[in-house]
Amino acid sequence: MPDQPTGRPGNTGAGDNYDPDVHDPDMSSPADASASAGSAGRVPGSDDDFDDWSERASEIDDLTAGVARPGPVPDGGGDVVDVEQAMADAVDAIDISDIDVFAVLDERDQFKTLAQRVQADFDNFRKQSTIRAQSDADRATGRLAEALLPVLDAAEAAFLRHPEEIGPLLNQMLVELKKQGLETLDLDGQPFDPEVAEAVAHEPAAGGEAVVAEVLRSGYRWKGKTLRAAMVRTTD
Image (cartoon, rainbow, N blue to C red):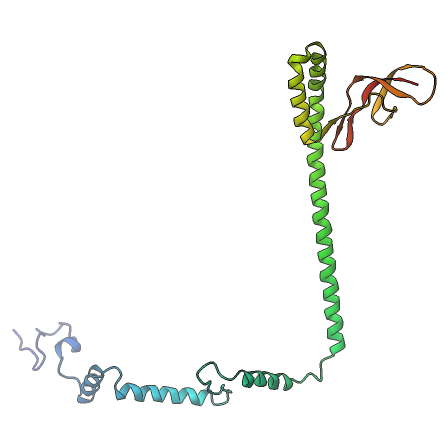
């Protein structure tokens, strides 16, 4: 068995791996040992830490030597008058000799006019959209009301034969439909108006203006517009 190298325990021979950190724990230089011991033995907050901080602060001061720093602010938020004066001085120091003030004002007025025009267009669009949506809803409900007219005609015909039984039901239907915008045209004894009535019979009398003598089929108005003209008999 070959001899082990002197001062290197753990090596059994040629070919074995040699790790200085493992096999030579005490062979570091005195300077390295002193630096390691000094770093390990430093106490946070000691004079050594203060010296390092002072050195870094000095380097920062050298880099920012040309940057203006605000003066110390006393307790209580500082003097407001001094701050306002400093801001006024900064504004006065701005060179506006090369600025065309009138051109800037004119551009401002142009943008203001453009913003007002856009706002007016948006308001008109919103109003038109609201009117259009309401008109579409009225047309849709108007078609539904028109589809119910034959039901109303049948209820009126039944009312003439059985007024006590059909009367309450017919009145309830008319009240509910009136809430939605349906109105029955009351034309009996009124002057004849071709916009709301259709004359299917006429009886001559002493002459004069034609009036509605009898309503043969009721007419209805939906939200102020004639939904169906009434069928009437007139006389003059």
